[in-house]
Image (tube, rainbow, N blue to C red):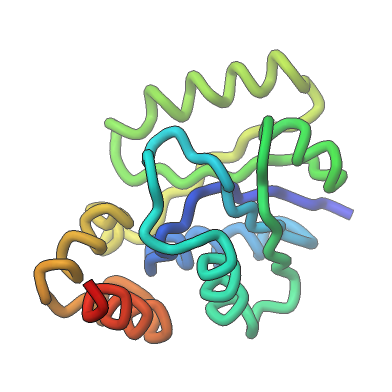
Length: 162
């Protein structure tokens, strides 16, 4: 079985993430979406780990070969534990490449049998990031075209309670 890991903080999942998921499931028999417990990019998350798991499970419910799991520790250890042969990473722009390339080389050094596959989302999602979506939602903007419906509702709830 060809199994891949798609890791991220997914705080929250965007349509860009979802596009990468749809592309990856055509390439692999199973895709494990690994939600990072401790992501160095963010000091704190808007959504708790259980909330992010729930949102991803809702969004991916119709995709039969996707499984959602929590990821804590080294990505290569997580990939080994799930018997994955590849790590999927999304690239939006050239600015993402340098960091992602460095991480891919480090992962290859730690585990040569696990490949990193870079996938680009559709052009209309190349500007999209969870950080930007959260900022728009925080300021009362409409995020319906940037995230799945259940995520837009969760963002509205989250910011109406602040």
